[in-house]
Length: 350
Ligand SMILES: Nc1ncnc2c1ncn2[C@@H]1O[C@H](COP(=O)(O)OP(=O)(O)OP(=O)(O)O)[C@@H](O)[C@H]1O
Ligand SMILES: [Mg+2]
Image 1 (tube, rainbow, N blue to C red):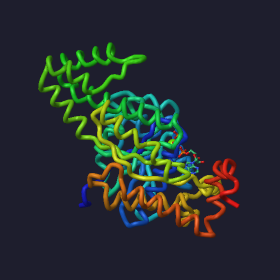
Image 2 (cartoon, helix red, strand yellow):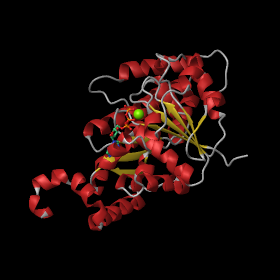
Image 3 (cartoon, helix red, strand yellow):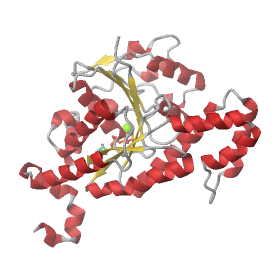
């Protein structure tokens, strides 16, 4: 009935870096562009996506689906003020849903995969629990968010690390002998000072089970996460994640794409305090414009292989930065995002 659905899980490793903000506003943007979109709060134990959408937090959702004995995910779909957007709430009213067992998780994933729409967006929790990693594995191309802070970048790398090793481990689940050998390798090859790489795992597995080694290589090539830098203050912040691409390739045999840049913007906090999605509260503020740009890239380039570094993204971000420097309407935001520079180089801004 629909064009094939695109599933976009949104994760990041660190908490408080804008996963839910981006998920909610990308969902509204895609729906407003005319695409039938379903957005799901899968941050079990920390659900708050409804707040970013400006919706009440008292509706049954994933938590109730998990606790009920028999039901369908469609029973928990709620409408939103946007014609093309449906929402599945998280687990606000059901404690301890963060610790779901394997069977419940499989049932949940099966139900989520059956949802019919053009875009299925999944807001994931912080950290690298099996639940989060397995939700992220629902698509070959998920979004991973970081901010320019080194702690967030390290957590993003940690997330990708866990993601690749979990995917490899799952890919061998039907080969019990090789699977337990792999678990042994994880155990003695990782630890302080050791950088466990996919290459070194392959070296050991190839001698034991060549088919399994091929399977591992295929698994790594299958995934292509997209990176978004949130709360950036200058296009040069994109340089801070440049090393990530080489690092994931070298250690994890994983290719990642630079996909978006969202400016740090005081309008974000204002929109949350007003109980409205940012792109509705102020569609012209710089963070809204950054998010709309990402929504357009999802529609037009999601299925393409991107350049690395992505000149289109870099050029857009630089041009946009020049534009906001000239636009009087954006001056107060510009003052906000350049404030650390203002303190160091006050003359530049006089
Ligand atoms: N581009 C931005 N500009 C300014 N503030 C931002 C921006 N993005 C996010 N924030 C601020 O960061 C806060 C945390 O964002 P959000 O809740 O989306 O993070 P999260 O990664 O989903 O966190 P958690 O892991 O706890 O779910 C927001 O409430 C908002 O105040
Ligand atoms: Mg969140």
